[in-house]
Length: 473
Image 1 (cartoon, helix red, strand yellow):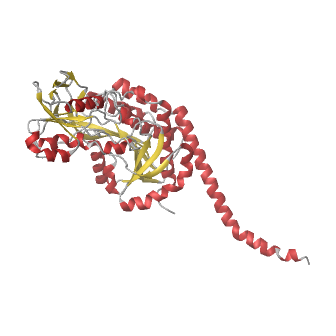
Image 2 (spheres, one colour):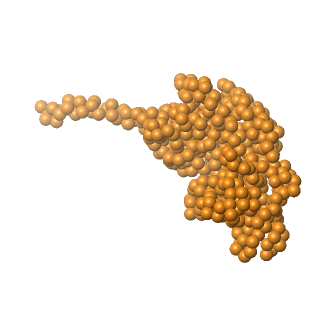
Image 3 (tube, helix red, strand yellow):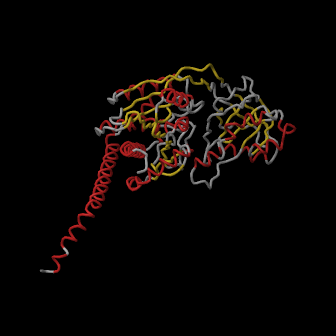
């Protein structure tokens, strides 16, 4: 007998033993190819059949700035509710929340009344939630500082009766401009209360901007409990440079007049729509942005883009006839800018109802080119769920997307203690703070293709979370 024939049974047995392994590899490859194909399909649909751009046009051009408590905010609630209602979702509803009602009033006047240059009007905006100066305005000598430590060193002897000028710029070496923002924003948020400790009568803050321009940036402040309330304005970065240079030459006196005031809280709403899960309906995957904006500009990048992208995620799934295993919910939060009452109300209601959010994705960094996602969560949640996302990188890399540790977002932050993995959609950040909180944040600054690619990126990640969950095998 041929000796080679004697080995055939052994070879056949070996073949049978490795066959399951080949089968597993084949199945894994088939699944990855299937996922890659569907993600490609998502991108094609977003770029050809997406609704985010026309929705954004209406939100910005037909409604405009949407400060919480304003008629425009109410109009935005009704418009987005109607648009979600056209998508054939399983549920669309409004969630009531009480929001602050701050009104800017007449145009601000911030004037250098005495300096080596004489009288100069500065480009300025009252900081949100600030009190007004009264109709007569205030006038005082200016003292420039960089931080709260300098305030403490100067003390009441040099600050009482003065106007404090906070002039700490963004750190230009920060590649992530949100990190630069985080390193400077405390002077806007708490500068008025810190200066009031020492008897100052007003605050001027360098705008939170990454470059030099003439656009003043508003934003929110928070008065510390027990501290006197004094008026606060932001001036453009160019004017901050001018004021600083004049102070190096001689004393400068500024006249400020603002007419802003706060009224009693008003009822508003979060706008919510969802596709109910077919297998695990009690596991919720949230996508969202904040519907309110500041009262200057049109709130295009902040955060009209995040709202329409989140709505479009659901639109794409319906268009593609995708049947999710888990519940996919879109939430448009009200009052992120000057109170976070929409996010807090949503978190409280979720806790009260015992809802479980597997993941929450927030888009609130503008509508620029997608770069990926940042992920946060309680230590135990993050350590278990973040690794489960890593195998998806090969599917997302062709679209320039990465997944890394980082912040999730303000509105979804109340869900953190409820065991939710928080995810922030991350577009390119370099241009965001040219527009953030300014009159320049208008529809024309949003690129249609970049906006649609962001929708596709968010939809792709939701698809992967829905299909595979967030548990390590």
